[in-house]
Image 1 (spheres, rainbow, N blue to C red):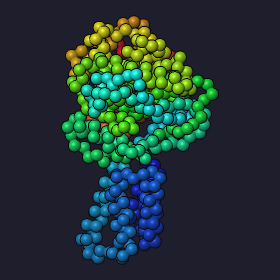
Image 2 (image 1 turned 30 degrees about the vertical axis):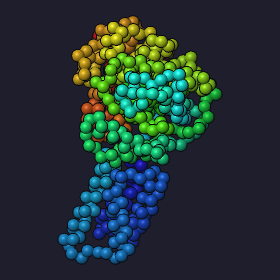
Image 3 (image 1 turned 135 degrees about the horizontal axis):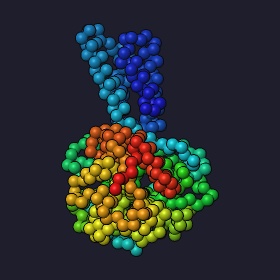
Image 4 (image 1 turned 180 degrees about the horizontal axis):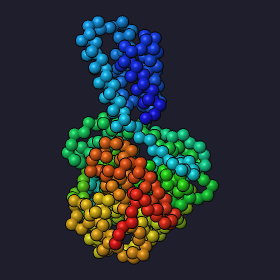
Length: 447
């Protein structure tokens, strides 16, 4: 909880239990709670979870202003129970649906951020993407890219989405409702627009060119889903590029409108083609940045791919030089079906969730751990690990978005902070070609 959370809860607590404090203390608490709530909305933004507390403050202000008091003991008791219920409800909502704060530990550099729109003039919209989304079949390929880069300048955390035209959290809920046929209220994740990121805009880049790390998301993922890991990598001296695969991503906010994913793997004519086109997205992104003289060392490129993004990262490295390849629960069955094997050409670090390590998948007869054990060639270039008590989405930031996800199939029982710490350590050790530290959470795959 931040300062505003604590201050408003404490002041509201005094308003609820006003019969135990003096009139003077009550008035002071009423004034301070009103001022704090007003400043919070201006500085942080409106958060629906505070509505019950706002009702307490407003009702208390009206009652005090007009001298409204209940003399009947029953009415007093009912009034107290209503206020107490509102207080408990708001406190629990604030605790279980906090405003996410993406912070960096053990950072060497500050992290700058910029978003870049790329229009690929010589590439038509691929069928692999428009058959899975509301993309038009005609038109040129457009990609939206986040770049995190190291800087020696100081920065203050920023709220990337606070003033966005559309609400990021509502868009996520709409996707979940559309995909799973459920009816989650759209306001439930609206507070995501208030998320704090330990990054700054327009920071000066380092004087030396930094190595490049590409992040490629999975099916209906999003370029921001691994931000907690990506800003940590950038703080260690890397230029980190995360791209939305437009049409496959959960949503992409292009100037022309919102492009959103509408289908699962069953809606794809050929999943391998999706991965191949994703690998072209990576090439298009790097070509654009190099041609625009973006300040980075493009001779030193590593990739991190989650799920379907793991397949696309592998296909990219088959055609291009890569320093390291980090694969988080890579979805390789379609690659095996198309190419017959997984031929490694660079140092490759596999890390699986414990679910996938144990062979859990409900869409393939061939499990991904069997792919790793039986279809990966050049095993001298491969290192295999798994993260204990984890599921497929413990490699992305759902744990920070809402603690409620720990009760769903999206996450394993591992705590978000433990999965993040483990992911960060694994990523940096792999990128720096160090020995991977074995711990309670990172284990070696036994052949």
